[in-house]
Image 1 (cartoon, rainbow, N blue to C red):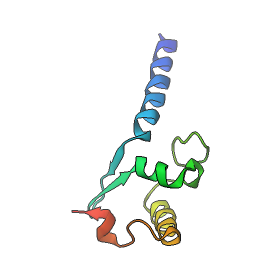
Image 2: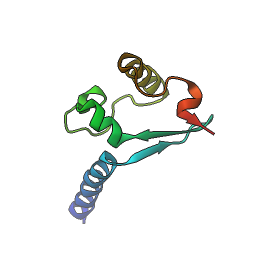
Image 3: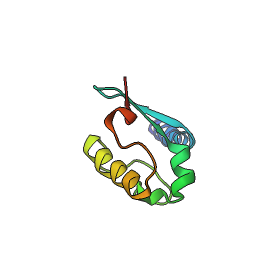
Length: 92
């Protein structure tokens, strides 16, 4: 029984990662919903390790408001692409 549960959890995690790879993700925020077009970022950056710890992707260590503001805004500034203002990311 324990093996079955572990296998199901592992498959769910793998499927979730594969599913998220091509999706537009939405993160609720107290000042507005943040929409993240993952597929667009994959196509533009072509390097998962710009955000993820490994080339295979997966969960982002330390992901949260501070991480996103620092990492995303810095990248958008360097590439001169993507939203920079609060209301461009945080939609009400």
